[in-house]
Each structure stands twice: as structure tokens, then as C-alpha cells.
Length: 256
Image (tube, helix red, strand yellow):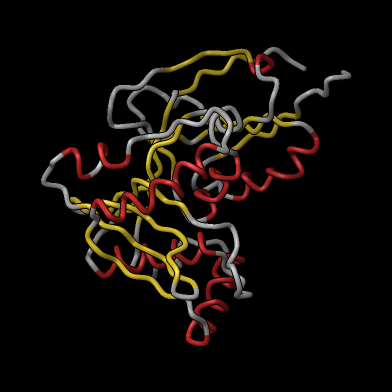
């Protein structure tokens, strides 16, 4: 494999431009899954509510968050109260709570400011407990939060800030989900570090977003550096060239 130095920001943020149609930016398959699910919801026990964030909601949500994040490689767990209500800012925080069989199963904690609805924390189960629906809880609540944002006149939805690269920090699947729902990648507003490495320094599958040119805020180039198995699992990251161009580079096996 050729020598290849990469320079990348240590963190990035995800921004989604909103339109009046809350599913307009979704891929064809996700749109079909959502339409099928929405047509069946009336016959299920699934529902949601949006309410102001309280300490009681944080107390319920925190164990879900800690369990989900704690299972991830190189996880970084934040103090939810300190980063939301504890800041005592004028920015209002809310919770979108999802219910199945009248039990809360997950939530999105978000703030509303100017023309942006900003997601701070988001935890949902991978599958429905008792219902068979094509859209899983994450995809369904992505539709719900978009719909809520559009109804309130917001033009942007932010999906938070992640550490770069994926595979070393959070999972590549998380980035794939955010790309699949129409997000674009930008440099953080706050000061951030940049790193330069040889690509072969990484011994695990990674998806890395590369540092853009000076004065450019949007990140438009990335690399999936993965084993043959990883390529098979994650190569669909190349399906979103309008958001970011991803180059595929096969990582040599340990025997190579």
C-alpha cells in the first residue's frame, strides 16, 4: 500500500438543512420504510410526546444513555444535567420521548435557538419490542423531530458533534446513519485540534473526515480505511456524494 498521510479535525458537527417535506432528504429506501410505518402506526401502541426537559426526565434518561454509550469503544460519557439545565442559560431544552406499549423506550434531548433545532443526546433501541415495522425507532424519531422542527419554522437541524475518526471513537454505523438521513459534515464552531497520521498507523477499520481547505467550513472529503469485511459492511458510505465524497482504501490483513 502506498504511503498516505492524512490530516483531519479531531471533531466535527452534523447539520441538516430542512424543507417543508420532513422526508425529502432521506434516501429512497428510508422513505419507503417510513411511509410503510406511518401507514401502520394507528394500529400500534407506539406514540411520542415532546415536553420541556426536567430533572426527572434526565434521571430516567441517564441510565439509558450511560448503558448505550458505555458499550462503545473509547466511549466518552457526558454529564447530561450539567450540559443542559445545569448551564442555566436562556436556551430552552426539550425532550422527545418515544413510547411502546405505554412504556418510554428512548428519547431525544434537544434545544431550540434562533433558526436551529439542536440535538444534544439521542438514545433509542435498535428494534421495536413487540411491533413489526419497517422503520426502526431511530428512523421513525428522525422523522418526528424533523416534523417538529419544520412545524416550528426551523431551517436547520443539527445532529451534534462527534469525534473523528469513527471506528476509533464511536461506530462507523453512527456516521452512516447520519449520512443516510441527509446530514452534512462541518467543522465545529469552537476551537478544535487537528491531527496528522499515516493511514497505516490505524490497525482497525476507520471512517475519517479530512481537514478541508483553509476558509472552508464544510468537510467534503473522507476515507473509509477498512478490511475486506469492513468494506462489505460499510461501503455504502459512498452513496451520499452530495454530502461528502468518501474514498475507499482496503486495509491490509494481519497476515499481509
